[in-house]
Image (cartoon, rainbow, N blue to C red; front, side, top):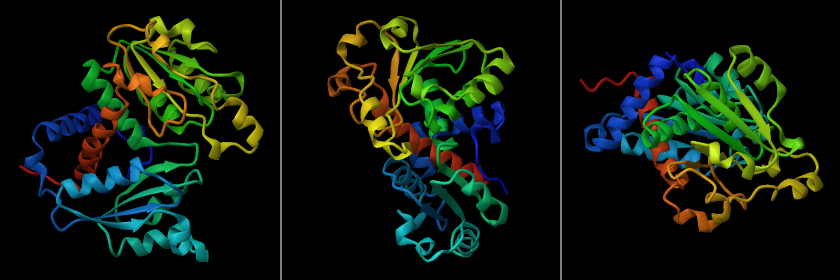
Length: 306
C-alpha cells in the first residue's frame, strides 16, 4: 500500500507513467467510467477548499466510485477534540482511499502512519500540495510538450505558497530547468528551497521584484495569490495583496507561446481581461486536475484495467 505525501514520493519514471495514464484518461474517458465501481473515497478537509475537494470528488465519480466526507473541521468530530490518528482509523473502516487537507503541516503524514487505506495529502498548511503539483506537471507537459528545457517564472506569494514549493521540488528533477522568482522582499522564496533544492543541485535561478523585467524570458508564468489566511498581520496582507497584477499590457511583453498558470482561486493578481488571451491556461489547468487525480486514485488503489 502506498500513500502520496509529496510529489517526490514518485520517481521521475513513475511520474511519467502517472501522467501517461492521465493523458489516456483525457482521450478515452469511457474506458475508465467503471474502473472504481464499488470503491469509496473519503474527503477529509479540515480547511476550506473548492477546486481540490470537488476535483477529487469529480475524479472518483468519473471512475464510477462513491464519495463521502466533510468540508471543514467544524463539521467533523475534530470539533470535539478527536485526533487525526483516531479519525483516519475510523475512516479506514468505511473507505478504500482518503484525501486529506489540513492546516497543520505533517497532519496527513501522521494519518498515513496509522491508516490501513491509502492517504493522499491534499494540502497541509504551507508545506506541500502534491496533487496540485501533479496537475501543474500534466498541464505543462500537455501544453508545452515537455517537462525539461524550460524557464519558469513563479510570481507572488513565494514564502507561504505550498504549490510553489512543491512545484520547484518536482521540476528540479528535470533537465535544463531555470527558475525566476518574482516577489516582494517580504514574500521571497524560503532560503531552504534555494539552498537545499536549487543550489545543492546546481540549478540556475534568479530573483526579481519586477515582473516586467523578466517577462520576455519566460516559457511559463505561474501566478499565485497573496494568501490572507497565512498572514499574522492584516496590515501586511493589505499592503502586499495587490503587489502584482497581470494585465494585457504586461502580456504584450511575453513570448507568443508562453502559458500563464495559477493554482486558483485568484483575487486581483490576474485581471479578467487576460482570460481571453489564448496563453491563459489556468482554467484548463483545473480540468487537467481531474484527469491526474483519476490517474492517482487508480494507481494507489492498484486498479488494473487489462
